[in-house]
Image (cartoon, rainbow, N blue to C red; front, side, top):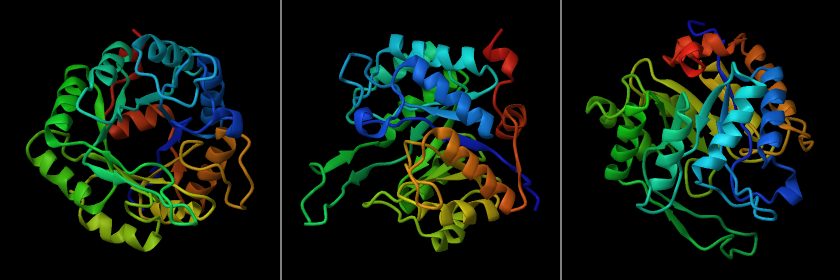
Length: 295
């Protein structure tokens, strides 16, 4: 296999999951502890959502740059070698909060949601699990985020929820809006987006520019591990964490992000891949060297 290094990302917490039910990290100290567990298990990158730090409000996101700085400073103090990938996903045209967080934290990478999606889910009785929501990411919003990222030396990670969004990333790269080749995350398992079916992956790869760095964000229960294995076998990077799933390959509930990353590292090894170190990941993904993050 030409690409024998697999870069592992841990999505530490996500948003909206109630921490009183699932034990996801919220405070800077909790985020740093989970980042260390992920790093010790093989992660090079942590994908960071910042949650509301007010008591009892931890299931909601925060776009306060002070909160973002406290969380990222705690992770960097605990694990200075880790690469931080900051979320930017926000509904509506006002991106001032995510922009303020990017400019304050200056992460090496940041999510760039590359298109719009009707974000839907049904309950077993066919009622909506939540009110139908448009996760709106028009081109002008994408361009605004990309300009901020470029000005701050942040590499965009293009999140693609369906095939049309993935094909749009090719156009963005040709126009110089994102790097060529781009970094792509295939979000699979959202009920109104691409399903988490391994058979889709070879077809999706055909829609990518040569040399694209890709990974799967697999949303679901233990069935997502078949998708991770296929991604590893096809040369992709790998991501999991308490944002994406709570379940290990055997169906047991994970006790921490560390347990999920340990299972993901085994997926890479099963495919004959080596787990990349943070410095190897920086080099392969074209990121700033660590010395420029911590002068």
